Length: 105
Image (cartoon, rainbow, N blue to C red; front, side):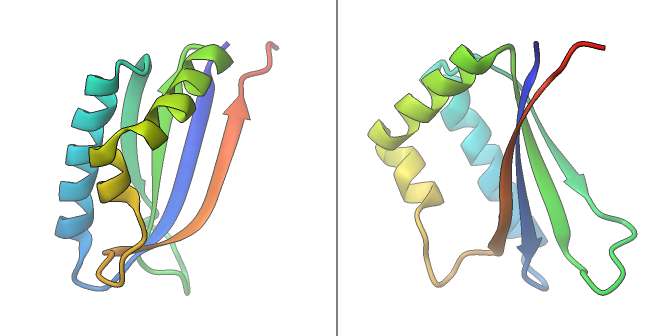
């Protein structure tokens, strides 16, 4: 059963390159943590209407145990905390964070 952690943000005007650079650093951290991350993908809303700059980062795990191991490891990692901690200079604004668990059809 696949588990998806989806984080949706609004990227501030002119800050997309900064946002993507931060995600590349985050992916390195997640791989170093050994969090069983299957994939990490970035999606940009192309038909956003009045909501420009919407992007979603999708983290895919094999199961809830793999996701849980990640959630347990991240707070203990200084590089993760430094990168993801709130800052006035953040290139994005968090809008939503949702965990999806695949249901068999």
